[in-house]
Length: 113
Image 1 (tube, rainbow, N blue to C red):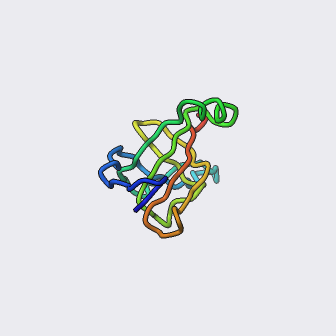
Image 2 (image 1 turned 45 degrees about the horizontal axis):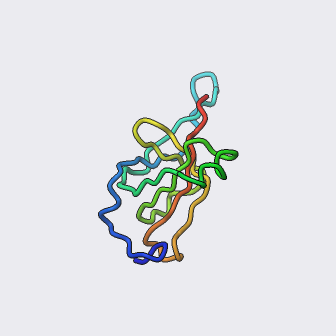
Image 3 (image 1 turned 90 degrees about the horizontal axis):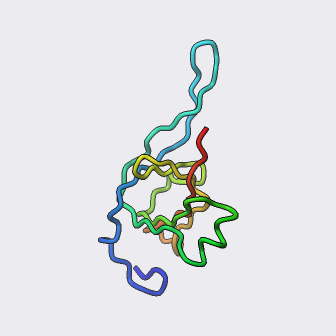
């Protein structure tokens, strides 16, 4: 597949990440608690935002990155990406060329708390 004007090598998908779905559980007494469940663990191409992109993105996102994974219909902007014990919010999802082969996720570090 051609991405960004060049052939994509599946071997570039080498960074382990876990895709998580946000959940709400009800504890004793009816209290609702946020949580997550694992959708699946995958290998991704992880590219941190760098150069001039950092200045443009710094107003909007901290620790921003672009993540390329194989297509999965369960992934949307309500999901989270876990990499190295850090959580990232998905800002946008792009089903590249609407071919259901690869998807590009724009992510930023999730705020704690």
